[in-house]
Amino acid sequence: MSETKYYIEGVNGPVVTVKGGRGLAMMDMVEVGTERLIGEVVSVEGDVTTVQVYEDTTGLMPGMPVFPKGAPMSITLGPGLLNNIYDGICRPLRGIAEATGAFIGRGIQIPALDEEKKWDVTICVSPGDELAPGAVYAECQETPVIRHRSMMRPDQSGTVLTVVPDGAYTVTDTLVTVKNAAGEILELKLAQQWPIRSPRPVEARCTITRPLVTGQRIIDALFPLGKGGCAAIPGPFGAGKTVTQHQLAKWSDADLIVYLGCGERGNEMTEVLDEFSELIDPHTDQPLMYRTVLLANTSNMPVAAREASIYTGMTIAEYYRDMGYHVAMMADSTSRWAEALREISGRLEEMPAEEGFPAYLSSRLAEFYERAGYMKTLSGKEGSITIIGAVSPQGGDFSEPVTQNTKRFIRTFWALDRSLAYARHFPAINWNQSYSEYLTDLTPWYNEQLGEDFLKLRARLQAVMKEETSLNEIVKLIGSDILPEDQKLTIEIARVIRLGFLQQNSFHAIDTYVPMEKTKRMMAVIFRLFDGCRGLIAKSVPLSQIKATGIFEKLVRMKYEIPNDDLSQFGPYEQAVDEAIASVAALYQ
Image 1 (spheres, one colour):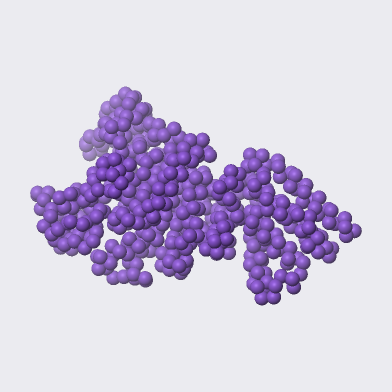
Image 2 (cartoon, rainbow, N blue to C red):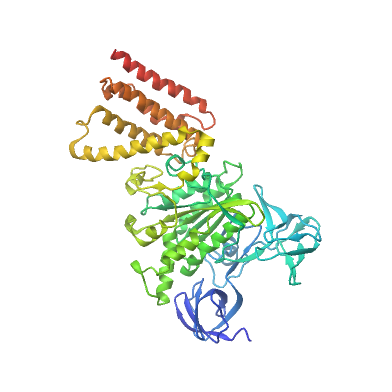
């Protein structure tokens, strides 16, 4: 069969119809036209095959050849992925820029990994060893903070025949030869191929028992995300989705970050690259990019590649999870990905569902979010993928299809509020609309690490904020002067919680990241004041007299003045609260 047997019959944007026989299979990778543009089979009907092309199709004409690759859409996984930036189909953008300039040329075929760079490799097996799927056969130091482990593919096993000595090798050098059960000789290298739409197998899915610690108080205290779980950040334009994801990428206690810019503006990805290159990771004191992979499929890049980019990022995350790392994947945003689905579906003339999205939107979102989890890998290690997906509903309408379908597959919902964002309240997470379903799973961890009083303080804080919301409705109607003193106290304490606890300054050296113990101590001091004030108000002391001591404003400033590494500084604040309460009480004896 000649490889030029297939030819283009028609072109409709990124969708190309191909004729020439029945040899192409669903999800096969093909190269289209004389420039060999990368594409993927998405429909087969008789001798007519439909291909979605991941590059600009301008200039393609009927009659041009189509070359089948005989395998599904796959990417190369190996050392060199970290500290790099790729497009939606895992082509290195730095390499493309060197080859074509500022704009991506068509038909560019550049290896995902540097094939000339030599890595200092340690071989972990000997001749005669039996290698099961996922077994580690070689290691190298990919970056100063990440040890790269080359593993048997999950669909391979066998007996080691030969190994090379420890030394410097490229990703294309054969390190180990293995004979499998069928008698075939497998050549194992530092790198391997894996199809992006196929989840990498694991031994078992584990229960989520610990949180992803982010250093953001409203998240860690009120709406925690389990390590290996899924969260959504929906919000209108300008509400701070991207900024919040940047903070989580910088400060969360994940081992690696996969940051996917899916359909976002190019200047945002430039900002991410510039920031991450300069930022020192607080956990390792090394540049943050040493444990980060960036994937950029911006709004001006081919729409079909945007659809594939989310699977590319997930495959990279699964690869490092299988090494035993805890990976946080930031997808910004899944709404742009869904829009790509809608555009391609329209060109395929599929029956549209709600708001023009394809009927399979829900199942595609499920496929993506279900690849997260806390896993026991084939090699016996524990690893996890935590997904934090931004959603961009038009006009901030959370009832639109992408947000509603996403809520079916996630258990943490951080609803961003435009009014909070415009009031410069960061993170602009609305405490009334947000929720987390991981609290029950994480309760043993909180009790062990922080004591049982942490969850009690959290419950009290939520109750105060909920009561404030109800009181504000009354205040809007009749004003605050008519309220009794105890309700005025609730509103005042809620203000302290809003400004001094929930609001966080990402540009302040101390406040940008807050450890869990400090978060707990801050809540304890606030409620120490609350309880003291309630005792005074029960004795008919007016709230204005307590406010005159300045203690409320002092607690608002507390977050800036207590270092994260010296929590003994809470002592003077507790003393100040007690003295303020005592001084007012003395006036009314």
